[in-house]
Image 1 (cartoon, rainbow, N blue to C red):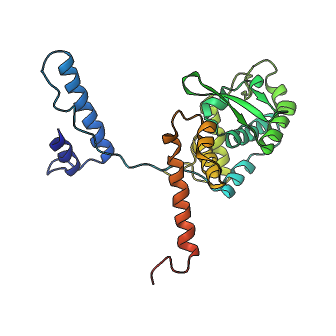
Image 2 (cartoon, rainbow, N blue to C red):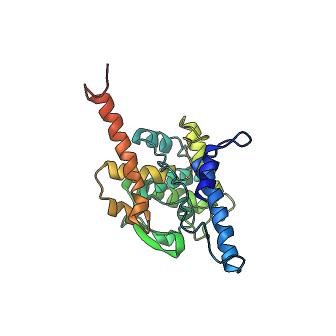
Image 3 (cartoon, helix red, strand yellow):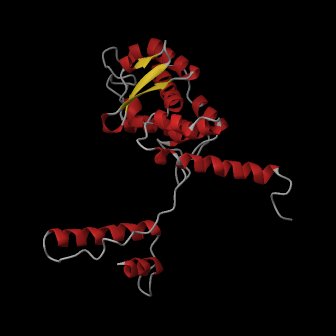
Length: 253
């Protein structure tokens, strides 16, 4: 099994070398086949049981810097019910670190503007209470008072569409994409703005500002701090960039 994985990574005259991710998927398929054979009594032992798949490199989350976030949030025209909704949606995503699904699933009763908090319903039915910053509170107040009543006075969702129903994840993503294009930010490719971009930026900016990683874990709704630790890698990369440009003896020559 280990030799098979090594051969996949190296390639041969007829097959190109596979990336670590592709080799890991192939190894997973082989391991599953061996488990099935043992379970069905086709073979007495599993030769792939002790073989570990290739270790995948950690992919750093894409995060915007603060100036880019401000450009993105300012790219929505504040006039009209839909524009008020779009601005408040983007402010809400950045202010709370909510997933797109959590934002569009939020009900009006889940948001307490007087207290500056919102209840988010995350993966596995788990709920968490998160603070809402002043900019997002102002945007939400403008939308709920002057925009949402014209769209849907009956739907329980905070964010509604032009037909009066709850806003879908796809429509929320389209709103983000339009704003990114207006702000001159990339929307395609590996570094394009995606539904998770504001969540990644939220976490990165909190850690850059000195927030404790355990607090960020709770705010993001991560079950394990290990998941949150990937954001610390982003901040280390930024520290390296600042050091390389600011220290007089950081670079040779």
